Image 1 (tube, rainbow, N blue to C red):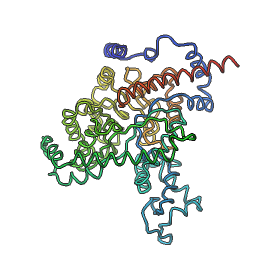
Image 2: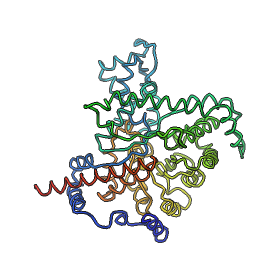
Image 3: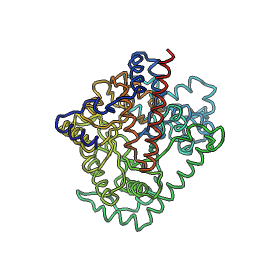
Image 4: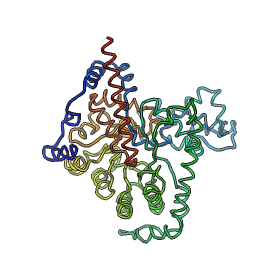
Length: 483
């Protein structure tokens, strides 16, 4: 009710002061923590230590393969007897031939120069800022994909362990779940074309052909294998279990928007089916791949029509969409004017990833007011916005979201490629955007309140977060009394 009242006020006066988003009366522990934060906010080392220990709630926008540091891919590739194509710094299957420029990956561990060149090529570490950050970022994925295909469980173990170490309690991971079934069954469909495709007919053909059972079987087998491998690596259930075992993980079914329309539709059907209760670990749907890809641009409205149709068939499935991950000059001006708006109106998104180009949309202030009134959360990824789009500081709309009462959560996006961390995103929010402790605390709570987990899980996470925040703040009272 309080949030709804604030949203109405936002629509009437155009903004909600940040103070209005914080609890009306701070506890003595919270007040002491605020004072501590203000005392160290300009001390980079103390600030990072403070934010590392701060409970951070959930990471709602996390591409699993992009969240892995290149060092892990290099190690796994060596263990799996893969090769390095030295010319492009790309991991590939054998046979290896060092003389032909395809040395075994194991040799990188005796060649520090080659090892470091590979890390730089597979991430934004040491990238040449005079060159195109957008292309370097997205090209990195092709360079390490061969090492990731058999290591999903290892990757989940890595990201959950890291999350626990940074006091993140919940992850929503984007990872391919039914790609093989979608590719197989979509190849039997007639091309989806024309101004008004008959989605009902295509949907019925997929259902009658047994696609849903095949997609569910593939996804369930993959997630079962991932869970078993994660538990094995983290020793879950044992006395020496890694803290990552306690991180709650849910999955967002991804859809490759640069694929042929028939593939996109099949992947969407699989995602909606999985997230409608077929597997409780799958809680939502999203469109992946660069928004500026020529196919993604060409088919943007077609994709929104697909989602609009499927939302009518599966109205309870949560939807989060990458939208507005663009900037002026990257695409023609026309493409900047409607992606966020249509993702809300026809894509039925309750969360938007990035929205960096929101002020290039038609009537951006009306759009902000509507997002506040509809309680649509923006998943803000500061590092990838800088790396991919070159958007930093006042050019980023973070303050506008906050000013107009739009819910925000900080997310990592692709922390391995960005060479970032959960803590690093919070540091950026303070150092580059001036956020205070109470605003950060509100953003953390948003990350759980807007999670797609089921009601009981979300209630548990909210209770655990409240207890963790209270314990964190009590430590600052104790520290102050000793000083």
